[in-house]
Image (tube, rainbow, N blue to C red; front, side, top):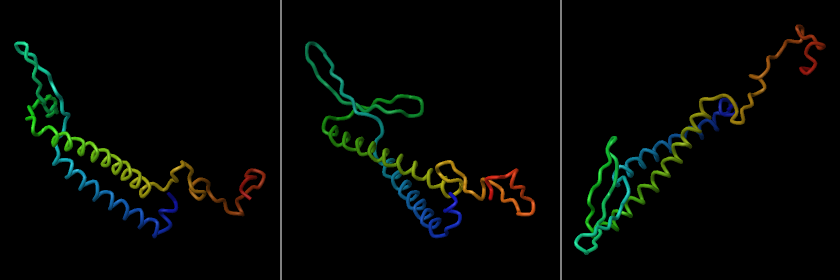
Length: 139
């Protein structure tokens, strides 16, 4: 963006926002790593006319699916922690998208709409070389 390159104040504000977003993204990644990944499932089993149920956590390690039994007393807490992880992952995605946009603004001299600033779009022709008949729009 041409304004970013020319205006030091705007450039500084955008750089500060980029730094803030990167710090928040790093802290969100730390919080996410503390919570369990995967999803909580419940299975009903029938054995000798008796129906029982159990809960398990399903997640991936590399290319393998892992199923881990969860005791009944830990189901509510684990469900809350999984939902919190999902919420934080959505927030992290928003911050990463914002970081990507800010980096694009700070490094790219083009305007976000795709229009180039006038000084980069067309060359300025000195008066002595200009042929008004050949270049009628550059008066």
